[in-house]
Length: 281
Image 1 (cartoon, rainbow, N blue to C red):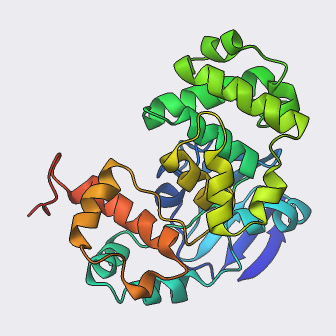
Image 2 (tube, helix red, strand yellow):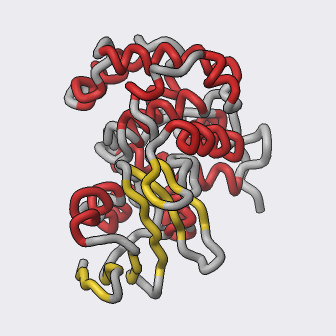
């Protein structure tokens, strides 16, 4: 990857396996918006970014080199060889056809706190509503980053809210989960840094011990917020996909189960008949 600075922006060249709509609007992160010019704007780690694809493997990022190296380089996982990973998981025939058709899905390295809160909000919810709740949460209680964009509020800030405050932004019954989560994270009862340094088994056990966190929320948070790439979340779509793997996941997924999951999840939403496990003609 070659990085150059021009007119207050960064130009990245030689980037492989990154399509912005497939990565930023697939349900793993909820604060990205497509702009009229085809670029995407979003916020993470208290920073704002506008990013646009400008040719094969070429991207323009409206950010500084300092912020790129401290935030966005890791956030988009630019230093990981996704091309090699895709070739590995393509040893499975179903993933092979999916990668070829939807090439460019990446796992974003999100902040653990934001990911955990976001997936608690995601329970029994759709992406549009999740985005709305999170936007109201950030606009109401996050510090302003730039005009129109606010940081994701800290556990300390959210611990100041009541259950009713969470309900007022549309969180519904999840309000009591968010209140308890914020209180425990702010007080140190929950230490996300400790969880990040655990084995997958222990990290999942720790998350499942949090009020309001079930298996799906834990798995999504572990994959998207704690960088456990071997985590393989199962929702309704993925349970249908698993009918194609009666003997379990293939060996070629090992170590990258979460990346394979994202491709299979996208394939399922676009190819499985509702309520069945059959491929559309």
